[in-house]
Structures are given as structure tokens and as C-alpha cells.
Amino acid sequence: MGYRAVVIVSTDRKCPTAERPELSIVLPLYNEELVIDELKRRLFEMLAEITRSRGDRSLISSVEVIFVDDGSKDRTYELVSEIAREDPRCKVISFARNFGHQKAITAGVDHADGDAVIVMDGDLQDPPSVCIAMIEKWREGFDVVYARRTIRRGETLFKRMTARIFYRLFAAMIPIEVPLDTGDFRLMSRPVVLALRSLAETHRFVRAMVAWVGFRQTAVLYERPERFAGETKYPLSKMVRFAIDGITSFSVLPLRISTYLGLIVSMASCGVGVWALVAKFVFRHVVPGWTALIVLISFVSGAQLLVIGILGEYVGRIYEEVKRRPLYVIKKLQNFSDADE
Ligand code: UDP
Ligand code: MG
Image (cartoon, rainbow, N blue to C red; front, side, top):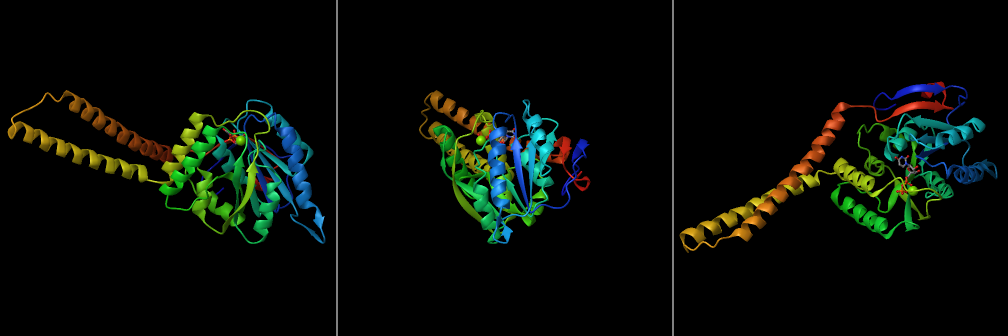
């Protein structure tokens, strides 16, 4: 592993894989028992398609599928484990608890051996069939092929609007170029994967980390369908946390904004001070300025709290980073060869 020790509590060594596959598919899963059967069907359909021989060779010669069970509380683990027992190309990483989508992706990518690695959500909002277009782009020589959503079905207007605004704001704030309207559904070549593994931060905003790494990147377009079954695992509170993680991991602009805000507020209060002195000594006529006082005090204390809050966000992140804890804890691995463990 590129950066830090990953704690593995127990390992299933029954089915070691022979050699490195050409393609790895990483699927983060959290409480997705309602989706697994259909996911399996569509995934295997796509795998059959890409490994089918066309003329003298197939699009992809060998595949591994890595299911990352992110501490599910339902039967997700049992179901994917069953798939892995039937098919040694399928592997399972099972987390000791729920560590979150981005950590699940990280674990999958850390364990993926393919020359290309595709990350996709397990709820079928990232249709497996799009992978074929991604692989074709990779064959043309691109290192990162991300899937850009043209239409998002079944998501609330609020989610679509906030996502739209956030990604535009985010792109304007950070010094690297991040593709708009993309999630984590993407293909990465092995050099990108190795580079990504070397980024050690605790708060992970994988889509921007991939953009940061660089290499030749391109997009394929797709319509994002509705979640096949079950509920979103990203309620508003998690979305806000995710957005703050994204911004604070890639930009110090909020800190600069607090400096500017502080500067503006202090300049304004200097002006008000001068005006107060002039009013007192020149005009000798002081109105009981209660309203102005209240407005000023609440504005200044509001600005101060905001600035302290922003500082706190960054200090908190420094604290998280200096602890240098492993990013995730794996309870069990299934179908990984000894070398990976
Ligand atoms: N997910 C996960 N851990 C979590 C939350 C979500 O592994 O803590 C997985 C989830 O099973 C799904 C993917 O991440 O495969 C995206 O989550 P979801 O579909 O709920 O997010 P949305 O598409 O609504 O943004
Ligand atoms: Mg989803």
C-alpha cells in the first residue's frame, strides 16, 4: 500500500488469483441488499460483452470485480460474498464499520491490480454498460475517462440545483481544473491509480484528487438513471459535510475570504469611529444611536464567528491529519491473493 498501514483483522485465503487482471471494477456498497441481484445481472452482462472475443481478440482479456462492503447493516455482505464464492474473479473487502463512500472507493482502488480501474456506484445509477465506452477511450490512450451526466433522473430538483451550484463554485475556487457534472464514476489507468495511492490525506474528495493527479483526461457522456432500489445514502447533512470536505481539502480561499472580510469590517468600523467623533466634537449633537449600535454589533460579532468557524474547520482538519490514523479498517478480505494481504 502506498501510504500507511492498513489494519486487516482476518482474511479468507481460499481462492488466490493467479495473475494481474487487465481491468478492475470497484463497487462501494452500503446497505444495498435490494440492488445486488440486478447489479450482478447487469454487471455480468457487461463483463460477458467486454470479454467476448471480437475477431482475434476481446476488448478486455481478464477482469476482477472488487465489492467494498462499507460496514453494511443489512445482507449486502452475505450477498456479495456468495457471488465471490461462485466466481473467483469477484473479490470482497469488508470494512469493520461504515467509513463512508470515499474511503470505500479508496480501499477498492488500493487493492485493485488492473491496468485500468473503473470505480462505479453499486446502486446502478452508474450504468455498467457505460464502461464499454470508457474502455474504448482508454484504448485510444487516455489515462482518465470520467462519466459526465447529461440528465439526472429521479433526483430532486433541490439535489440537482445544489449539485450544479456547488460544482461551479468549487471549480471557481480551486486552482486545478475539475470536470463539471461528474461523480466518482470513472476509469483510471494504472499510473493514475499509483499516483492516487500516494496522496495520503484523511479527508478524501476522490474526484478532485484524480483531477489533481493530471494525465490525459477525457469524458464520456451518459444519462444518470434513477437509483434502482433503496434510498440515497447521502442525506443533506452528509452532502454538506462532503461539500465542506471538498472545498477545504483543495482550497484555502475561505481563509482568505475571512481575512478580506475582517479587513472590510475593520475599515468600516474605522469609518464609523471617525463619524462618531465628528458627530460628537464638531456637530456636538449626538443622537441616541441605538439602532446603529445593535446593527453594528451583530454584524461584527457575526463576522467574527464566521471567521472563527472557518479557522476551526481547517484546524480540525490539521488535527485529523496529524493523528495519521489508517483511512479504514478491513475486517475481512475474500478472494485476494496472498501478495495483496
Ligand atoms: N456508499 C458507501 N458508503 C456510504 C454511503 C454510500 O459505500 O457511507 C455507496 C452506496 O452504496 C452507493 C454509492 O456509495 O453505491 C453512492 O451512494 P448513494 O447512491 O446513496 O449516493 P447518491 O447517488 O444518492 O449521491
Ligand atoms: Mg446513488
